[in-house]
Image 1: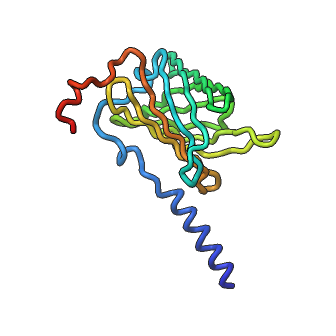
Image 2: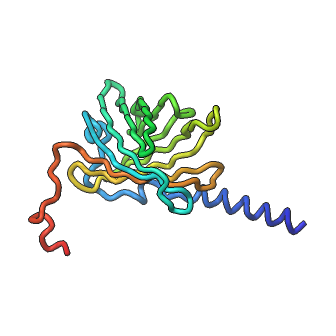
Image 3: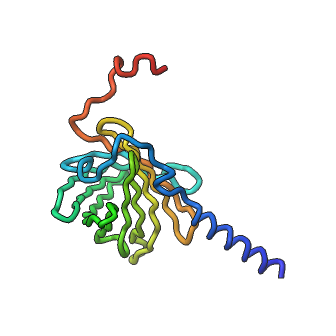
Length: 190
């Protein structure tokens, strides 16, 4: 009986922790405004790492994206090159909803992705079908980006299955053509 109680309490704790995420209103600053169609228009580059649930970096990667506006939303083509030589691609199609949020689809995404923006923040939630032993496994991504400076956005995606953490993706998006910080810009910062 004690074991059944322990299993029930553990299951409830996992469910509650999975539901206790911060919403976009709590996690956004007023500016700079993160506008999906503006930031991802044309080419954007990103550099990132994947950490397993213990925090160990297991792979690094680069991404090149190309965004195109459509009458009802936005298309984002992503090309990944992983440190082990693996190449991946994903093409997102985002449709803008009347409330200003977006619904997204991609070939390796299960169902509809939900994307919302507010102030400097963007949040994208979806189930990704990852290749696994000749088949695939669906993992949940809770993907946050914050626009932190001209042309730079920092992204963090928590990856989980059944509410259990599998790891985290962290990357920096850099918009080509934006100036890098100079010594003059940083003077007095330290």
